[in-house]
Length: 97
Image 1: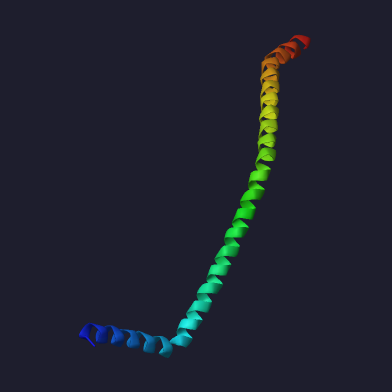
Image 2: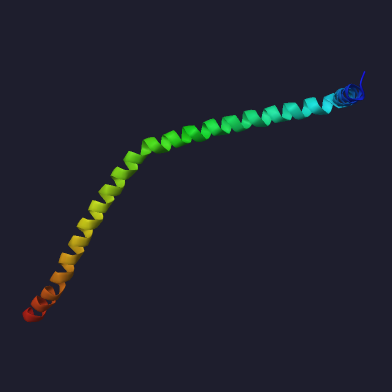
């Protein structure tokens, strides 16, 4: 056997020994990693579901915004008319006294 093969065999034996020695720790870490991965996957699914709900509600919100803009414009128009009428009303009150 050449020295290179002996070094590779020794390295493989050392790695195998450490894996067997620390197998419980490695198993625990693997389980924790799987749990975290599953939790992250569930959160991503929930986020995607929430985004779908938001996208479905977007036309409703857009309609409400348009309606509010129309009402605000009508209110502004009414305020402008009443503001213009105020001096005329004051003149009429003054002339009746």
